[in-house]
Image (tube, rainbow, N blue to C red):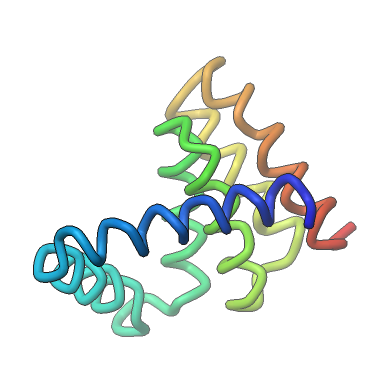
Length: 113
C-alpha cells in the first residue's frame, strides 16, 4: 500500500471509530456529504474538482488524497486535476502551492501520468 492509499485507509479507520462513538452524528454527516456530492446542477466530476481545490487551500493531505481519487473515478484527467490545483494556488497562495505536492503524489500513486 502506497503513502496516499495509507492516508485514505487511516482516514477511513478514524471515520469507523467515530461512527461507533458518535453513530447518529456521523450518520447525518455522511448523508450530508453524499447529498452534496451527488449529481444535481453540477456533475460529480466538477464537484470533486471543487472539493480538491478546497482541500488544497485547507492544507488537508487526507482530503487531497480522497478527492484526487474521487476526481479520477468521476472521470477527471490529470490535466483537469492539475488545472484545478492551479486555481487553488491562486486562491490559497504559497501555502496552497506546497500542498500540490500531495496532488502529484496521489496522481503518481494512482498511475495517472
